[in-house]
Length: 46
Image (cartoon, rainbow, N blue to C red):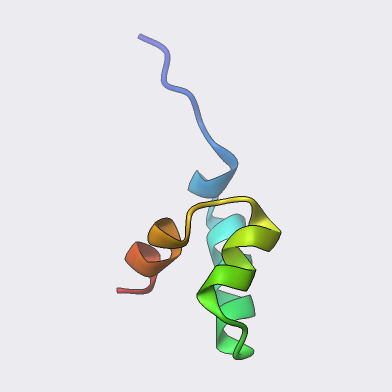
């Protein structure tokens, strides 16, 4: 069985997203910039 790997699954991508959030950027702005759901970012922060 093949499992697709998405960009948002990569550790580097997650580090980039969290790094942008740590700079004080709003979740909605980071999500839009990275073309992902803001709900995905909220889940990764916890």
